[in-house]
Length: 208
Image 1 (cartoon, rainbow, N blue to C red):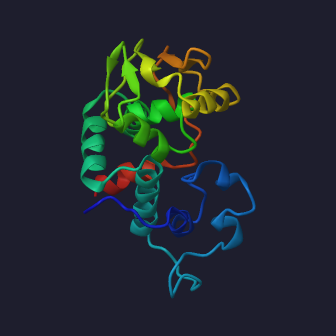
Image 2 (cartoon, helix red, strand yellow; image 1 turned 30 degrees about the vertical axis):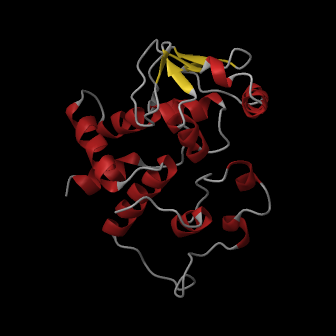
């Protein structure tokens, strides 16, 4: 299955909630979910009672779409989360949060995770001084994520730095917007992840 390249607002409408896939637009009256509260397609306005499996599936799809991950990769994250000690659902969210593209987004360098992922792919970020262009790279405790020196003087990154200065970073990340860098000072816990999801439904789905 190839990565979805269509209108991302349809994904939000399909899940019935804002996934914040288009950055600032999602906070305005132009948001498709606010304008059309039903699912896209010919039968989008029909009322159906969803089965237990359907509820679990939709929750899994929602998380996949928020982080921009394909099914096979998402399943691998679940297997790893299940192998680790602790609560599987929380482990899963922690692994997703520690992806380099998500860390760049949490730093404020990207209006959306998709934009942050593109910046990572283009080689604009370093981890502990070494260039990393793999969006799925797992950042670890005490790692220093920074904008590459050659990119800091560009007008685009100066604008992103101003945006980062005005955003609130999660508690597990210490951001220095002026220096265009951030250090992972703790591993994210469930209270730090402000995404409206019920991860236990995903665990139930994969445990069938």
